Amino acid sequence: MFPVRAALAALVATTLAAGVGLGLEDSPPAPAPPVPTCAATGPYAPPPTDSVGTPAGLTLCPVRAALEIRTPGAVLDGLDLVGGVVVAAPDVVIRRSRITGDGSTPAGVRTVGDGAVRIEDSTVTGDFTDAAVDGPAWVAERIEITDVAADGARLGPGATLRNSWLHDFRARPDREIDAVTLAGGDTGDVLVEANRVTLGRGPGLGSAVLVDPAVDARHQSEEREPLRKGPVLVRGNELGGGEYTLLQDPGGGDASGATVRITGNRFHRDAAAATVRIRGGAHLADNVFVDGGEVRR
Image 1 (cartoon, one colour):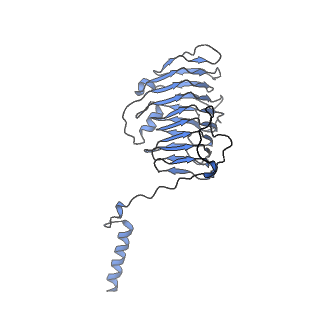
Image 2: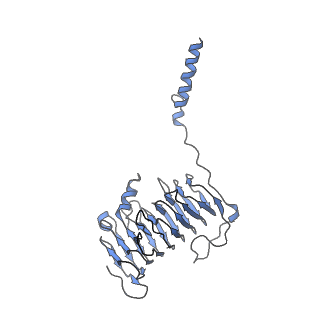
Image 3: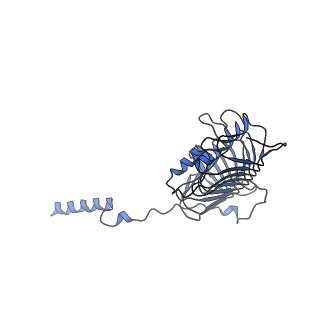
């Protein structure tokens, strides 16, 4: 009987390991990792209206790890994070924080899957392999992106960058970088409004604003159901630097199914090649140089 019992025990062990026939194949997924908090920062209070980036004088709590947020509605407040944040849940908020890249993460903040995030009153800096902020379905207000050796903000479908400051980028030897890269949205509008964007100029620095249909193709591949094309709006910004301060690549705009409108912006005269180069169907209106004069194609 002993060999029979031993064989039966081995069969049960194998079944348990495989989760077969016992309902284990339907076991719930592992719980979401805890969301770090920082009591030292104190209760949230809106910063002054002219504030950009992490408010001065706050006590932040150090976090030395890359985070993946899978808790809907999670709030990250008052963190001094080295690494990056992947947002895989809806309605996440990141505020009053500083995110410093150490080269180990693709982005300071990236949305994936059904992730959606609001980033406010925060600074993103340091080294990332792709961009400081990247992905669809995010809104950033009053953020600072500075001293970054990567693209600044990559706006996918449904992304908004408003009232923010992007400056002092560092060129890299392996590829050209751009301060703001955007494309027509398949699930919502793309808006860049009331920002200050200064890329600088020199080898490895591309455009302060790049309208690039390849970005749309990249986000289309992330298994989001395409619903509609939304407009791309670039309005009321102060823009400077780059080979071309504003560049629309071939295939952007009308060719990708999105309407691109570039209106009411103020440009510096510091582009290496030209202030604006439009090779698509974008609509330009009411754009001027900071020292006077109309900006034309």
